[in-house]
Length: 422
View 1: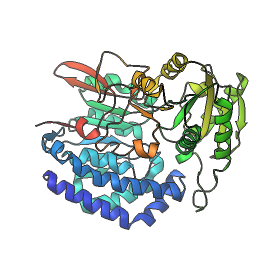
View 2: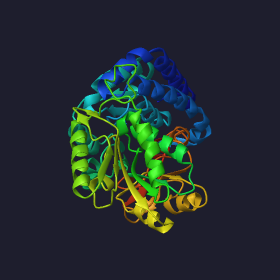
View 3: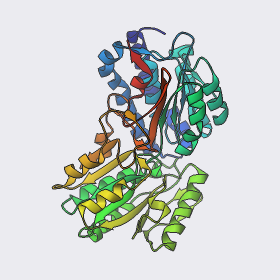
View 4: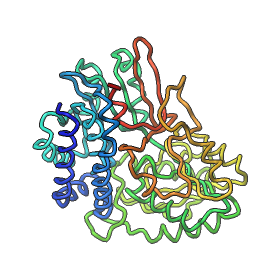
């Protein structure tokens, strides 16, 4: 590998190439992900800024060395719910000096092939692309002597079964998983701002992001007023074919995710909830859906939805909503809107600033908690200089230090977790 300055120069070339080839990139992204052009364009502009932002990490990276030694490489498994932002994950690992073997989701073969054509003239063999099936890639990476670390984005059901193999082969396993993120609206909140943020972050990518709000808790005193604002915003979302320039929200890309949404809606109604808006599903198109009178007995409040569906639940007291927010297997991100008690609630929910060793999986705490802050602001620097990640089944790190096997949880930077102090 070349020195840090040379690696930065290559990333600058990547930024230039991505900007110049945005049109063919949009075609691949729309075809592979189902995200409309408006979403793909927004994401690319944000990611061009994120990639340029890596320069502020220069002093940090200079004091570190790659986890991959001579002849070794880091294995990276990427999710299907992304297009240009996946470049940040790849570059994070590369910039600290690691060769990277990249596995895109099988359904993203168009984006993968496009990215490979873009990368090969710039990075050569330092970043290589793998088209084997997921299980084969996992098995090869875990058993390969030249792979000291794996970075994996996916479902906890995918990551957890590899515990024994990771431990036996003394690999470092960095996992980024699902969310079931609570969105809390207090009685003194700016309801318009809160509803706009909920609608934006819920319907962006058709709800197919791990940091999309999935459990909405509304104080009883503002429930009805907030609901009307949210319904109005939800009705205005233009749903349609992703290639149509007028479309704001396209289809849910995964057929199993569509079936999961159907199950959750059926379960919610059977247990007393009411669909206040939507519930309409045509193939992969899931129209904006708002479910009221939800409770924690319902699947939609326990398991990841990964679609444009909001489950709303009333609360009466601060202690009550704190208990509800913490009652989850997942701890990726939480959002609080309000004045008097908002900061206190956030302090009670948020974990440590950076990932740390835990005796066992930590539940009831979150890697990121935003207070009266839109996603567009809180996501600045994510995976670059702002640690991202969670607790519970939302993410973890397994590694062996000497003969001791340890688990870490919390927000992290992929660059730091795939490098060592010099």
